[in-house]
Length: 315
Image (cartoon, rainbow, N blue to C red; front, side, top):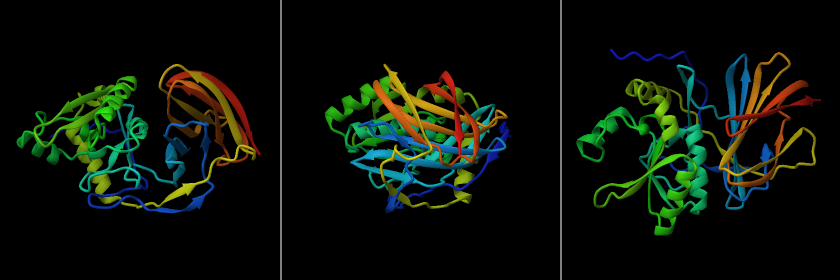
């Protein structure tokens, strides 16, 4: 019997969509945007809230997408912690992404940030034909010789396949995949030629574990807990209001910012992960009005490199 070393599983609500469903509908405009960077590239950012060390909610902003911003409120995917590593799956069946109907539209949280960034550079033209797989489907792929392996990063939401790209799109995807540390493969038989992208760095962490058992656990969670969430079109962030935390940075790499917010006792109460910025100079503004009144420490990371700690008072 396979043994899965799971320290704990935190199950909350998820913006889940299942095969055959259409993109999540867009509802009326909201004012819930929590980040602004003056960035022309599309980024997907996460605001995660914690209490007593446990994840209690996740908000998502995707900005800009074809001149609009999209906000998903309080969507908490399934968090599976294994040997101090965390697997976070996020639903990405949005109306501006072309996804094959039978695709299980979930990807790892960090990998999805890279995929959204790459798709935005191609005008969201490529169609996603594969993402998160069950072990049963993976074995079927092998029997049909669509794959030559039984253990795949697809089983953990760390790989995605896409078609319907132009030759220039393919070169853009290949170049950005290298910059973002993704493995790029162009393969498949006649009628099934496609681009395969996988997060190689994250896959190396998990590939020697009991991947089928982990995959089975994730699929049980996805089947048992379905909570469809509306996506709201969001206004731009008003940086002239209160509760704004600003940070200026210059990067020569394709990097993300992380703001890890702690209370005076050193307990993490929130974390903002900005998504991918391309090389350049940015003034990043984030809205902190979700914090209760009090004194907080903001630990700032560029990529995963700790830069400095700043202080913030919420009134």
